[in-house]
Image: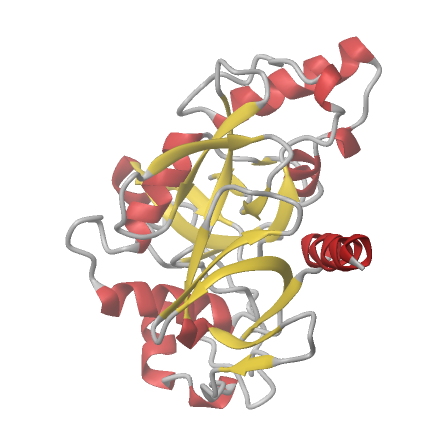
Length: 298
């Protein structure tokens, strides 16, 4: 009898170890996670099959959590339809106004003067390249844009035994890091599919790249209105409304974003987030699936 009881407990524990929770965000995105804690304001969790990093999401971003038992925590926050986006605010940022279906009422194509000066949070649209401005030089005539969409991907999918530093060591030059990865792939007979985050960025076309950690940090600071310690919520909201108006994915205030910058530890890379919580820059494993945004210099 004791043996049967112990065996039953062991099986229950094994089943619990394999079971995963399903977290569904208000955007419709589904994530397989292990929920660590739920409060009235936030949820802490780790991604499926990992123990770190620990993520935090406000309940206002979550539609529901479904557990292996079939139970659900529903947070009951109403979704905001595209038609509820302030037309005045949209016009202020880029002009075209989305219709009730979320699509633009007028084409985005426009004649852009070669010497046009841009502002942070403005849409860049030239020669088929479209993104949101997150960095500026030369009085706004040049700078950096960030993709309107994102993906959740690993930095590398190579087996741990084959993992090594590839030379992507720059903290502020993502293009140089991507060239280092390209050279490593060529030397070792690999493919871009072995480096999913880079592959996703490159697939957008010539000039797109996975940003270095300082570039990710800087974009996050601009997204928050120019300050991590004193964020301007109205600018952050307008930034995301601009992205949503073009059917893009709003920037997450709580999740980490991959950078192209490696650590000295061959298994790790640096990443950053888009909010005011310290540390602003941290380290994680190359196999970790974190959010990815592509950058482009104009």
